[in-house]
Length: 242
Ligand code: CA
Image (cartoon, rainbow, N blue to C red; front, side, top):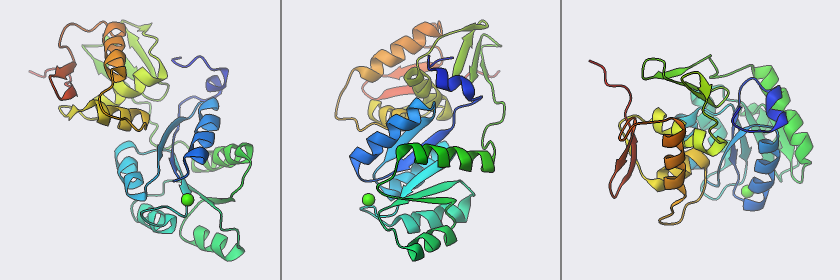
């Protein structure tokens, strides 16, 4: 396993949870609790961005704040429901019953009023996920180099010649993001944003270091699979098909 956290061993796969919340402190607290439970976490403060992430990542569940700066959570909820049955847990300061009913009518799976106990949030998330069953979690394996490299998105494991490559969670997320966007140049900013959900200011060596580690751990030859595009970023190219 890539994350040496005992909690993760109880999960067969890692669900990705998207937090849509404009209060940074709340995002941080929720993220901490979710990560402790072995979830992968993405976060955003904007509704529009949330819709983009949902399209791109197909998370397992969305924690949706109702009062957002660019649009309402109710609106986002409706837009999500037009396209999918992605589980939604609404989070809000509005505590009146009629708001609660409205949220549930819009298709939210559950509703939690601030301030809330993070443990309760986790319990509810687990309950929703149990009810909704595994989503987007087929037993997908990405195979490269004729079985040389095997990537298991469910568990976050990567094997090189059947040996665990011991990628960290962050390295796995970056690798997986590249693979999910083949032949596209992703800037360091985009990689930090999409893979890690981090605000990323200007130039930073962090991503370069992660890429270097990924290449080393996957024992890649120079220019194999992950291309460095000078002055732009990184690009994943799969196996060449004759
Ligand atoms: Ca808010």
